[in-house]
Length: 297
Image (tube, rainbow, N blue to C red):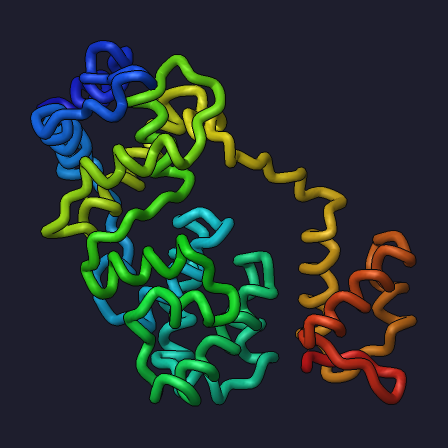
C-alpha cells in the first residue's frame, strides 16, 4: 500500500470508521470492537515506531522509561534513555548512585524531581522488594513518583497484564473514534470502551499501537485529547518556574562550589523567584545549603 493512501485511510471522517455515539457506547459489539482493533493494528503495522524500551520486558527498564515519559515526548526520551540505562543498568546501581550523577544524566528531560523520585524508587525496590520491581499495582503505586497510569503501564509492558490504561494518546484515539461530537469526555466514558476493545493476549503491543495511532491522530486533526475532561494545557516554558528550576540545577551541576549570591548574579531571572525556587529545591531534598554554598544533596 502506498504510504500516503494509508494515511488518508486513517484520516477519514468519524462516521466512515465505525464510530459510535455517546448513547451507543455501552452497546459496542464484539464485531465493532474487532473492527476497531483492526484499524489500530493496521496503522501500527505500517507506521509503528521503534523504541528501545519496546524491545525489552525488563520491569526496571520499563519503569525507567515510563517515568521519563511522564510529561516528556518519546523523541526526547529516546535521546536520554540509552545513556541512562548504561549508567544505571539496574535498581541496585541507581539506588547507590549519587543524586548529582543521576541529575546529570537526566539533564534535558525536564521536571527534575522525577529523577529524584526514580532514585528513591530504586532505593525502595532494593530495601523492600529485594531489588526486583514489584508486580502488584498497590506496591508499584507506593513507589515515589509512580501513579496509577505509570503502575498500569509497567504491568502491561513488563508483565503483559490486561490492565485498563489511560493516557493522553489513548484518550485521543477513543475520543476521535467514539465521541466525535462531544466536547467534554470523561475517562469514565472511555473505560468501558478500553476494556471492551483490549487485546487481552497482548496488552503491551496493543497499548503501543494505540499510543502510536494516537500520536498520529493528534497531528492529523485538531488534537482530540483536548476534548477530554482531564486535558490540561501546559503553560509556556519561557519565563516559567520549570525554566528557572532547570537553569538553577544546570548551573549547580556544573560547579563544585557555588554561593547563593553568585548563582543569583549569574542567572537572568527575578531574584525573589530564584530564592523561592531554591527554597523549594532544598525542601525537596534536591539541593543542600551550607557554609555559604549550594550543592546537590
